[in-house]
Amino acid sequence: MKPTNTLEETVQDMHKKDNHIPYELLDQEYGLYVEDYFNKTLCLERKRSERTHKPILLLLINVEQIISDDGTDKKIQNIVKSLTSSIREVDLCGWYERGTVIGVMFTAFSGESIWDTIEAIANKIKANLAQTLSPAVLAKLELIFHVFPEKFDKQKPKNYLNPTFYPDMAKLADTTSMASVIKRGMDILGSIVGLVLFSPFFIAIPLLIKITSPGPVLFRQERVGQFGRRFTFLKFRSMHMNNDDKIHREFLKQLISGDMKNAPDGGGTAPVFKITNDPRITPLGRFIRKTSIDELPQFINVLRGEMSLVGPRPPIPYEFEDYDIWHRYRLLKMKPGITGLWQVTGRSSTTFDAMVRLDINYIRNWSLWLDIKILCLTPLAVFKCRGAY
Image (cartoon, rainbow, N blue to C red; front, side):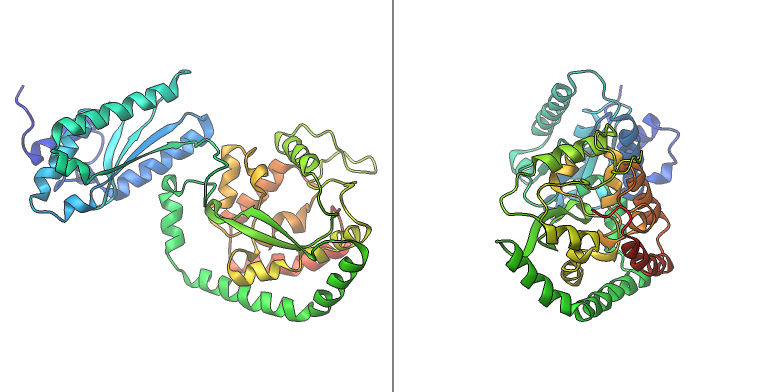
């Protein structure tokens, strides 16, 4: 068989492998699938992985330094030929970011030795590239392997989610729409008004906390925000100092799994999102929790841009560890909020999965009018104190 020597032949060879794909979806200059098609396919495979839990291996190769050199076409062609000789017909090779990053997506893994298989693929690609490229060119390549669903890493310095597998969400976040600008304006104005309106509480509550319980006035806790970014969540302290969070960890684990042992007081049957008789809470803390006064410092989080007035509830890192893959969607498109759809409908008296579905429903149907409606319903939900503990 005649070897593939030209870029045009490389393109044709790739098209023959996937003849159901329109020829226009191939970048004929470099012999790769175009960025839009590759990223759309990546998103579809990610969604399939979310349902099946079968992993995806994504290799990203940064070729930015090579693109800036002379003889670009030949060097990129050699990289493409090396990659296509290393992958199966069910795998995909294309631009993750055109002119900068080449992506190779491996799917349809199965078996117990999945991680050994992934390691073998990585070693094969690295070996083939080393045979095809000169050491000087190879040294300019940056190869990064990503696995989805990723294993939760407590040592991750910044994010709890890998945005690499969400190019659709990343591009949406980078696009500033008029509605998002207005939402941010509402957040800034609303948080300033809230801080001014409730300023008497910012004087009285800290004094009462200091009088009734030793320790700081504010409770600072790490939470997981949009795209898994960590931030410091603020509340008025409602608990005694030096508490063990084991009771809350176990409670959340049972809640997320649906295997609840704590039913709400009064003979109810629906699980609650908060512990009804938490021994860690001070007498004053019970009052400010019941009335949601403890949430007021979150206006500062909103003003900083870490939260919004309306959005999904920001989870605690150890809560996120127990999330199923589909639960993570609530952390992608919108910033976490002080209030949200589930707070004004079920508040704490709802199952965890039902709460997540309400958040996802809010995200998919978001509008400025929906935010206004939720903000108007929030005082009534707080006044009723239903599900507040």
